[in-house]
Amino acid sequence: MKVKDKNNAAIGERIKEIRLKRNITQEALAEKVNLGSAQQVSDIERGLCGLSVAKLIEFCKVLDIDADYLLFGTATRDIKNPLNRYLSKMTPEQSRCVEELVSAYAKSCNIK
Image (cartoon, rainbow, N blue to C red; front, side, top):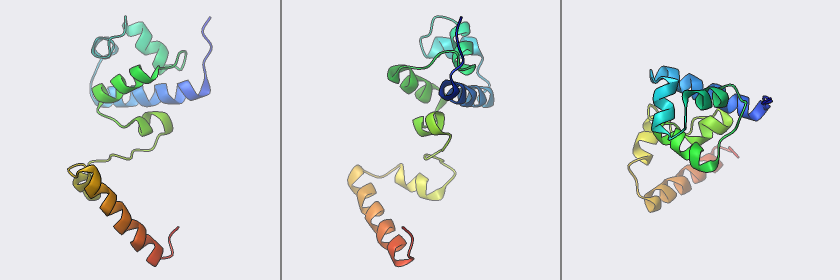
């Protein structure tokens, strides 16, 4: 008998939420992430089993969502945020420069 795990359940709930928002069936998701059956997706969504890192990456790609959101419930790549739209188009070096600028500004505002 499979036992529900609290962390797996939270991840599974978020997978289900995004899957439904994207109008993807469990069958279609299973096929896209190379799982054997829709039952495996159901087990993941109910927290009865977890994901390997490789499968987590596949779910993120297929559902077009951050791993941070699936793991912690926090979206860090919200494309509706204007700053993130710019950052997504920058090179790693440009992103580091922006981080330094934001960090300096935050310090000047006494934000730690």
